Image 1 (spheres, rainbow, N blue to C red):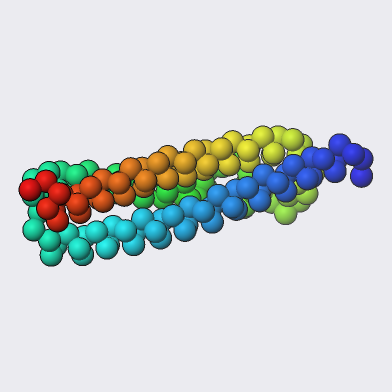
Image 2 (image 1 turned 90 degrees about the vertical axis):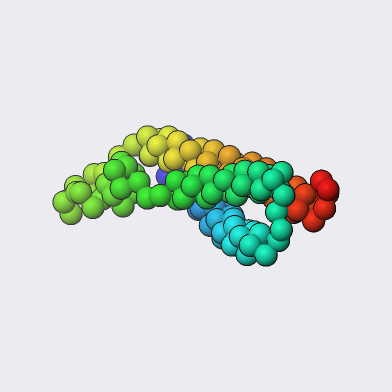
Length: 148
């Protein structure tokens, strides 16, 4: 195996590992957002709400729902893709060898685009989660007498 082949193989493994790490982070954040949504709803039902608290809390919940949507989009399977299992599922047994022996650089480029798209969704979801959490905190302070 030449140095170029080893480098391509290492790059391919690195991109696949980055996709796996991003999916793991996304799953953890999705669970966190779900727990925050459930907790906020449970607490908000029992608190007397002022209009400013309702507005801040409503915006916070809306941002968290938006974050959950981005996270779900990030982990949505791409069955129409040209990489990995979906491609192999469409090939005959004798065609798989040729597909696997194909240009690894093309596969790295395609997987890298997938990784960047996933990372971008995750980053936006983190931003929305932080903003939504800040708004929920503001709503809690407003409802407990901060704007009396």
